[in-house]
Length: 199
Image (cartoon, rainbow, N blue to C red; front, top):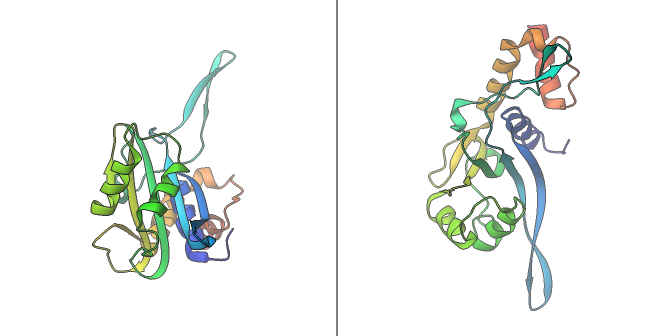
């Protein structure tokens, strides 16, 4: 858990939507005087190309259902045919990315952390991200996402933190039978689950 509750909410939301996450990645740049801190990247998230739902396997004479709970918020418009990558900034105020994150060097560094998913030259992916806020390659879709308290960005995809919280609560409400037996390790989900029990 970070010291930033807005970041905790955004990461809980993305985990529920099936993403693996890196958070608060420090970015440094080297110049003639040595290294200097440029910015930190709040979220680098990767979602594999799978649909949510249970896995089934044979256990003796019967088929057993196992489930790591994920859901899919239609707002995210997840493409289950390719990796979905989010480079995100979290703000409790208006929706906007830190200008230091919207640079070729920062985006190259972030994409290198995600591995070789793109089957396209990274320069081309970065150019498209800078121009459009998103890029699609044969293996992955990448988006710049502002997680924000209010407003909509004109240069990147926006997820309002209030909507993320509502989605988690709606998911918990719709799966009460499952969550009666769950001990939550994520403190944000645990708190929202407590509210759900108390309602």
